[in-house]
Length: 97
Image 1: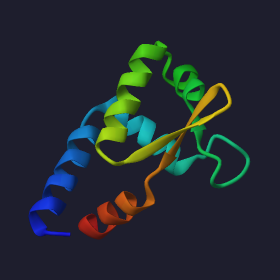
Image 2 (image 1 turned 120 degrees about the horizontal axis):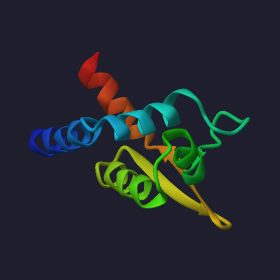
Image 3 (image 1 turned 60 degrees about the vertical axis):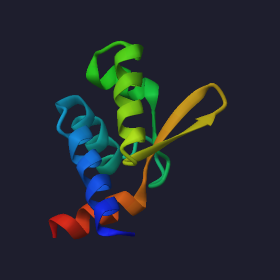
Image 4 (image 1 turned 120 degrees about the vertical axis):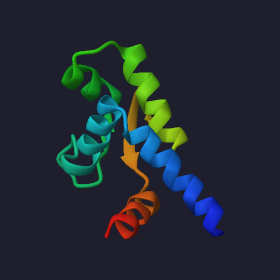
């Protein structure tokens, strides 16, 4: 990846994480998987309950995290589940390390 692309990608990630609600969502996915299995992800409804905000607000923040390449969202039946994008997590770790 070219240096300019990497810088743009990191800049977008940091911009997304500069919002306290998005940072909290990201940390929740990273630190405490919402299911019983390590790679189970977190459902949107979990964030609505955790953050005590409406579904449209949570959806907006999730969309920003997806657009920044920090997480991905997968539909599982009627639920949307969020997972970390491990390549971005590793890129952030290398940058900050």
